[in-house]
Image (cartoon, rainbow, N blue to C red; front, side, top):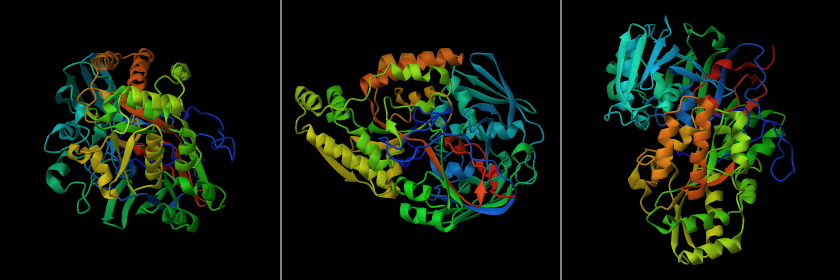
Length: 547
């Protein structure tokens, strides 16, 4: 459920991270909200490029806090690193997993994974990738000194060894399907072992460098201003040879200023388009807004199960008091649908043919103030305090927080908003001390892989992403059963059981789902449109819109 993706910008973006061919359950046109306004269609890619470019400029909603692959845990750093560093496996725009730096993997027994590496792959400094580089890169994720948020992905790893010049073997303490799938995301990133040793603590910071294998190399990070990438001439995958020689990233936190950059041509494009500007950008004639697959959903994560929300009746009541359709209008530009479960439909790319049946079996999110108020009374919670984090980081966060406050007060809860500085909002997801005094936080939970089990692992007892320390023995047993199942269809059925438990117990209160979004100015095209862009080398496919 990857609730971080830290700065949970609830923009109507279609967080494409690990989606199927649909976002919010739609593969075809959708009306923009309540049936009014222009329809939108979910597509995994934009029209292909018709020629090369000298350069293009891409807008990020915030400056990356790091370019260290082991610490990258949010949209801005991963959007840059997707073009610079690569993983053993690769997530494609249509949410499939294919070979990456590993040409294949085998599983001789349930607790052993063997990766055969691609020969002749060059790092940006010209050195050749070996098994030693893979071992060093993966082990670094596990080292306590690294402080990687991905360390929990390796919780079942006993050993990572070089077993041949181009072979790496991972041995597990128990079966772990998700670990292999996450080799297509940050946990599977490969960096030069020699470069890591030389860079030391400065690796990935504004004053440091990165030496990976992707289609672009990092040339400059002017802190507070830009990040610049140049084409890697020796890139191994000729099908993804960059069409542009240079990519410049700019950082624009203010949504209005970011929209103006799109309209003026100062920025050629950007993902996660500000929701308040969707209509203006779509009708501007200055470019195109496209919607892609998304594995993300806007949720309310419960942070304290010892407080007011520790009572399931109160969680149910608050969920029933939320007017999700109006929240979608105000927070997502009217593009989206109410969520039936914490993990979005788009996260179910593992078995897309079964997705509709899984979600049809779930109850529709109810909106019933009278019944909600009755539950609060039954719980003896009338007048009890619930503190919700809010922030000026993005309008969508404050819109959702205000809606939660209004809903809670209507049913007898004393809902208070606690303002959190934009630069501190992400700390809620990585620092337990930052959660003290908070009952709820608005999140944009998403998958990095096409498997919804990845999302639901974050509700397992003791997991890094289980911010409220929720614990349910039935859930833990069901998770372990699913994570040991290698057949995708059978695993999807087992994951559906986890979904049913989560909907029943509400450790996370679902809000809404929206598609991923990208703006492409009139001079560029070729970009993937979905959340897969967090790991797929999307910049390599962008080129001229005209011959």
